[in-house]
Each structure stands twice: as C-alpha cells, then as structure tokens.
Image 1 (cartoon, rainbow, N blue to C red):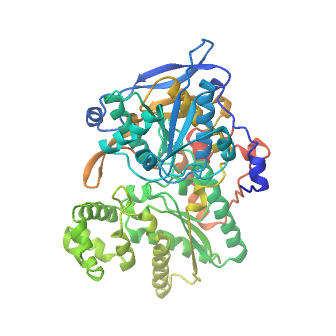
Image 2 (image 1 turned 45 degrees about the vertical axis):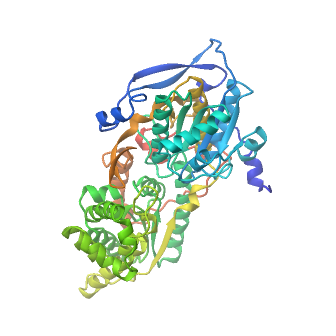
Image 3 (image 1 turned 135 degrees about the vertical axis):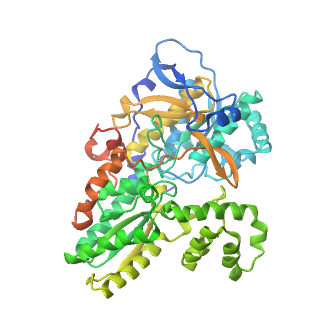
Length: 552
C-alpha cells in the first residue's frame, strides 16, 4: 500500500501509556458495588450475573503473576471514529505483554462477522501497517445488532473453534449495550468467554464520571473546527454570506458545543437548551433572524450558524411527533408500505393523534417526507437525512422578508449550506486520541488478564499527561437504563446529553451574545501531530472546562 509522507512519519509515533501499565504487572483495586444509571430493579433482573459489580482501578504490583497465552477476538461496531486502529494495536500489544504466544482474531465487518464466522488473524505485520491511522479498514465495521440467542450461540461456535476466551467489542452506546447482553448470556450459560467493551463515538454522548470521553470525539471536532475556522475566515474576507453548518450529533449537541468553543461562531443552537426552554421551530428561526438583523445594522451581512443534526428531535412538538411516528411505523410497517407514495402523507395524518397530526401537517412537505423514510437499525428516524440547515436558512429568509416589509430589516441575506459529518469520522487520530485509544486497548487486555466480564475499558484524569491517566474499568450495566425501542422497553446505555449547568455550556452561554454581534472568530487550523505539547497534545475544550484544567 502506497503511503503519504505524513503516513510514513506518523507510523513511527509511539503512544504514551499510563505509568501503571508500564513495566509492571497490574493488580485490581476494587471499588464500591455499582448500580445502573436508572431503572435499577429492571436492569438488575435482566442482568443478574453482571449487575452490581465494582468499579476497577489498576495498581502496580511487583508480584509475579502466571501468564498463559490467551486468544482474543475483536469487533469494530457501528460508525467509524478516529483511533479505532490504535485500540486494536493497544489490545494486540497488551495480550502479547501477557504472553508472547497470545493471538488476536478480528471479526470482519462488525458483529455480523462473529455470527457468520468471518474472521482473520491479526499478526504483528498487519497491526504495524495500521498504527496511528484513521478509519476502521483493518477489519471493517458493521451495524448488525447482537440480541438473539441464536446469534449468541452461533458466535460461540466460532469462539470455541478458535479457542477464544475473550471478546472485545469496540463501539458506541448501542454496541456496548449488545456487549453487556452478550456478557450476561455467556456468563449465565458458563461459556467461559469474557466480553469487554470500549467506548467509541465521535458524538461524545457515551460518557459519565468514569468514562470521561468517548474516543474519536477529540479528533473529529478538531477536523470540523478547522473547516469552520476556514469558513469564518472566508466570512471576514468576502463579507456576503450566512453559512448554515450542520454538525454530527443526533442525540446530543456535544460536537456543536465543542466546535463553538473552539471557533466562536455568531450563532450555535444547542438542542438540549431548545428542549429545556420548550422552544418551537419558529422561535429557533426568530433567534437566528434576530442575529442577522443585529449584524446587518452594523453593516455585517454575513455570519456563521452551527446546528446539531438532531435539533429537529429536540423541539418538543416535533419530538412528540417523532416518538408516535416511530411506534406507528413499527406497528404498521406493512400497511404503510402498501400505501401509494402520494397518499402516504395523508395516511400518516389520519393515524396520528390530533396534536401530532397538526404538527406533521404544518411541516414542509420535504421534511415531513423525510420523517417517514426508512428507519435506522434501532427503529428511529434517520435525522442525518433531514436537511435541517436548509430548512432553517429558508425559514430565516422568509422571516427576514417579513421584517423587511415591516421596515425592521434593511440588510442583504444570502445563505450557504454545509454538513460536516463523514469528513471527521476517519481522520488520522490526534495525539490525544492516538494515546487515548492505544491506552483503552491495552487496558482492555489487562481487564481480560484479570478475568472480568461485562466491563468497559476506562481511562481517567484525561486533562493530565497520559503517563498520569488512571486505568481500569466499569461495569457496563452501571451506564444503563430502560428506553423505548421499536415500540418496546429495552435496556440501553443512557446517552449523556449536554448539561446546561455544566462548565462547557456555561462558558458558551457567557460569551455567545458578544459572538453574535462582533466578529470574534478563532481559527484553530489543522490538527498538528509534531511540535510542542501545548499545540499538539491538548485535549478538547469540553474536557478542559469540565475538569477545570487549562493544560497538562
């Protein structure tokens, strides 16, 4: 494979491990027993063998611990996130540190590879080709859900055939929910297979006090912030466009908030705030329109608006509509499919409650149509297909026309549209993510060595230098609650939303009125891999403000 000069130089980078994982065998310091994030009795009943386990922190030990070779399987699950290859590299090096004869098998194209018995052995030659690179192409990823006994048993066949004693699932909240369910099942039947999860998602919504961030968030937001900064520079140069930029983040606005902190745009909509204030779509439009008016009064007919892709679902009236629509189309999928396309809008209106029918009927035809398109594997609306950035810019344009008729607006308005999503999912990991991911993989190997199952790999104290990070694991059930999926209550990992009383949002809220009127743009520039630590190794501003630490 031909490599660019950057790839060649980057391959030589040696990720830093926490001191506790270097040069010593670890021992486990158990914490207090845990309970789930919500619905404790329901989760406990569903996970009797893996519920209530203690948090784990590793400590150094000089005691000699017998180390037999161990065969491990690994799965990349869900959407790509920068650093996945380093997780696998860290896992590989970790199990080789346990015993040089340990072997690692990668299941191809996600969880489906386990069920369909499609795999490859990952050797040192293969691993070395992928260190510090972006993407998931080493073994591919997929979105097959592991949720049936038949799937679990079929997977167990190949695990036994390859003498695999532990399975590492690298994924987001749904993938790690699957890992918890699989761990519980294998424990219940005495299969002798450990299951360990690794927290992945660029959306940043898989976290708590112990999982401080999911991997890939740092790199993706730095990629988006570079491009947003470039657009802001264009604003300051051309002075004639309003740029509406939709950013990934279906269920939470962490990406939009981080990019706002990095770039200081004129407007950033935070979905969680919209929901908390019970705002209507019209009120969101008015907020943006007023920013356009204020800037026009100062001769500034340009600006930047950041929009989380999941915004539409956080508008209370639309959220209620989508919830009922998800249940309706899950229950009557065949009936709806038989309706002629030109009649589907009216069919939906006729089958919704009065309030939700009125909301649906009020939406532009294109948006209403997109709400009824094919669901994702979890039965939810594919909000990334809804062009929220165009919807808002068009509605702002109409509102400005009304204000002009009333003599309240005299500016010029022209809009440009952008959606930054896939651009950030497979970037070469930042130094932070390269270190973090390698450490998560190595920590997963140590969790396997300690014989635990149903745990998620954890590194803490992430605003300190990597050598000072705290390594360990938390029970996956600790992050779970019950939610409605496909019309039924299911155990899932609770998504971490932007906290409106949290330090990152409060910092943003304090500054945004100034950003709205003035040109306070900052230009983060491209990710730097080589150079001084204060340029290359900084964590996200979200972590900095959450932990109230400015630098390493």
